Image 1 (cartoon, rainbow, N blue to C red):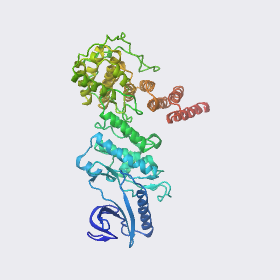
Image 2: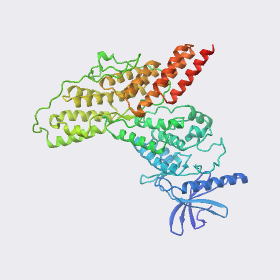
Image 3: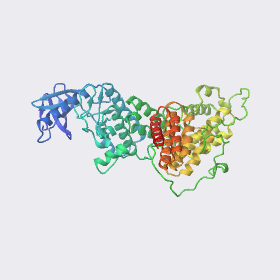
Image 4: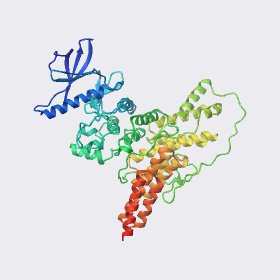
Length: 572
């Protein structure tokens, strides 16, 4: 097709792109509308069988995309055939695709990446509801319009669930770097495969590189099916959890729908925007990325023991108990209550109107909640009613300014400095309620500081930070941080106990996630015992794993191993 030629009632202006097919910019001469035309191209020397297969796929693309009407999906106007030439007419898109943006600018800010991904998920919600699986989610097929709207394009290998499968069993279609494990293996594909591919795209947007790389298609495919994504320091923890759940190897462990993944991204985005104070949990957390073996690196100075206090100046809280590195885990006791605070009779507010307005705004922000460990927003137990009841006139502007300073430090990632200020505010608070709030803020900041140390593989220092965090408040994310440090340092018993403590202080799916981690560590413990021919210890570990996470895949695996080892022992 040459420039300025005519196809039907379309006048071709220029070629836009060419790969397996070719895309043109054109004008619909009937209504003077600018359009894009995708024409089917046949490979040289194609047999009749290949031709018919290509035509069938091209028609299916037209039906798949043409059945969808959504702001985040490219609009198909019509599909035509003229003199043996097959083409699809669609809306013309200004702007550029995501690949062009990444090649030009590199990594995208996390908040913008979330917005892009959520628009794609909106499109996938529509597509999946109509039985359309895209199967080729990648930056080249994500178009960014100048007005901020994002469009999902190119349904060339999409599958419609209600139609017969054109692809033969074991036949693989897709772009290798963005395939799901089931695509790589030529297995059954459903909506969750699209979510895995979008997880890869989201990782690449924020990290600036693909999570699964290799020097050949084979090595890339191997990493997709067997390796975990590397830790990327510029992926915020809240977003990291969403990405890693999307990239679970087994479809049943991922988000089960585009709507569920979008909700998780919305929660993560709120955490990215929120101040560092604490709200009710919004999703199942995990303290760090997927486990990977590591050994403590040298070059650091461990903190002194908690009894000696941090040399950094954080006041020591009264120990609350709870986590222990050995023995049966138990929940920490509540912090000792200070003497009841009896407010004096109402007095005329001493703060200026401007100061009262500032502090009211500050407290409202304080109650919204803030991100911790990249997984969930931690729980603050204040409410608007508590805000109304609290006597603002009893809090002077100096306290408000100090709290604002701590919030700023937290936002800047200077968590240890923020923890110092929050701890000082907690020690000086007269009200039980605000003492508790500032203690939780201290624990939140210390947990985030522990995360930084963990990423740097400064394990003993990270452990000190997490342990001091749980002395201020029994945050499940701090216990989970302890567990991950212990696991990486080879102390499986300590990891199991800490994950169990994290589960005890969590609810719903968050608690289940920690229970599964504890069970997984118990299974590993049982495997080690079995390898050492300590059969009673292996059986005990497997049985404990079943008890820790009943009804989970880990429990089923542990039960199977228990029965196998028991049968071996009986058979002797």
